[in-house]
Amino acid sequence: MSTVKMGETGYLYKKLHEDFIDGHNGTTMSEVSTIAAVSVIAVLLRDSVMIALSLQTLQVRSKFFLDFVCIILPLILGPTMFSEHLFIFVTSLVCLIILSIFMSLAKKTEGRNEKYTRSGVFDIDMSEKRPFINYFRAILNVQTAVVILAVDFTIFPRRYVKTETYGTGSMDVGVGCFIIGNAIVSPEARGKYKDRRFFSDKVLIIENMIKSSIPLIVLGLLRVLFVKSADYQEHVSEYGVHWNFFLTLAAVKIISTVILCILPVTTSSILSVVITVLYQYALCRCGLSQYILNGSDGQGTRYGILDANREGLFSCIGYTALYFAGVQLGQYLFIKRTKLHEWLKFLSSLVAMCMLSLCLLWFLSNAVEPVSRRLCNAAYIVWMIVVNLQMIGGFLFGDILIKLLIYLTQGAKILAKPDIPACILSAVNYNALFYFLLANILTGLVNISMQTIYTSTFMSFLILLIYLLLLSFVSMFLYHNKILVKSW
Image: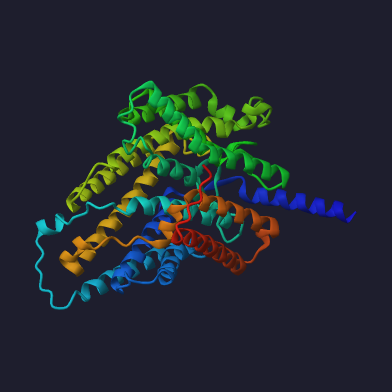
């Protein structure tokens, strides 16, 4: 009898947990952008504090502590403890940055009496590898690690949860950002395949891409087995019964590689537009939206593999269009630039693209179809372009500001001084897939070991803190000892 009651209790809690994360309509796009801005501000805070306090020569342990306090902690606090006072929280972080900058400028190197000219400042050397791209990609992993566990606690507002059908939640940006994050550093974006014109070369490219996608496919299949065997709570309308995030990444990676082996990489932007337009036409005019949302019988039932996984399978079309947009952005990003004024010009072009995309987003959302991550429709694709342009532009702005600050406080010595990348973010990038896998495993263990929706605010925050501390420590240990975890 007790076993039956325990089984009933487990089933009831699973249903409660699924209801806890299902059926939400999201928040405003501006709040989502503010949440994303916290990461940019946190990284800038860390860099400005390091310069203000002359901490460039800190030992690894001290840098780890500084990184965790300045970068990881704000990423936990923003969407949880300060979610109802987000503007005040962001303003406070900005004020700390301004204070750090004034401290740096107030204590210039003794005995220096340099005069700065406008041309001299704009000609600052920025030819070395810029850290803003690595910051952007690492932050995606860290932010995802925060929210995939935080969402299971009441400390995380329900308006940030993935939306059910239409709307914009903070968690809706995750998969879209990962798609673009992968695309901007893809071999196609970096021009690695431009000299491979023969059929045998293209076959080899596709073969290598399939091999590199095997870990994602394996992780996707393992996740399905775990969720079904452990009776773990799941959000079926997100990807479907069997499909998931890992399989989407793998499918988009393989499909885009095959297409770009047939067509020139320079057509990426055209491919993105054409696929988006045709897919949106199918959604609106051919009844595809209704099929994805309501199934073949119109009642939401799921018969057969296609019907059971319709969200995941069809959204891959939209994500492929988004990937091509990312490849085009990556091609533009990897154009050689050596001087500050060249990077400022690039930053201004990102701002212009972002403004144009915002106008297009307004039109699509109001005249065509509202944003839907579940469908990965045109409005969602453009929204993801906007969010990613905001984040990449923000990290580039911070990179330029820090470079300028070092120049103004240390003068010509900047030419001989390397940049000071955040150690935790470097560690996350070093084993990015392992970091994400470990985050998923730890999230699963927490959910199996306790009933998270009944946990107090203090205990929820403490668990999140320990969880991120453990993830950061493991990543730093592997990075410091040059242990690269790869399965292929």
